[in-house]
Length: 156
Image (cartoon, rainbow, N blue to C red):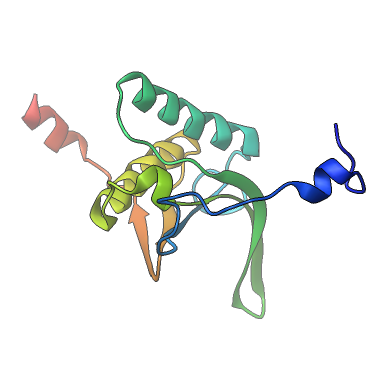
């Protein structure tokens, strides 16, 4: 392998790839690693969020369907509801960009739908009540919808 000081490395040239220039379409999904609300919920590991996202990608790839790729980081949200009520919660942050080269055929509505789908998969896995999504200059929250037993039995 050539070192940074070798003539081979210094002569290496790079050019922009045709079709790679375009607008930034950044996204981020943020969800808690503690199940439910409050300090008593099960604490999940970041790896469980990674596995849920990776399984979603693999399943979509096997069906020859589009998926989004990105990276995970761990963060921590600090809450201060009042001077006497504060809390901290570890979170998983999945972020990435819909790059022009790989996602040129995806419009913003399709990307938002993929983000919603992936966020819901991860939220179910981590027993979350809410998940936060950001795409370009917009943000939104998905909240778990509770179906009561009477409605479920009526639908059967």
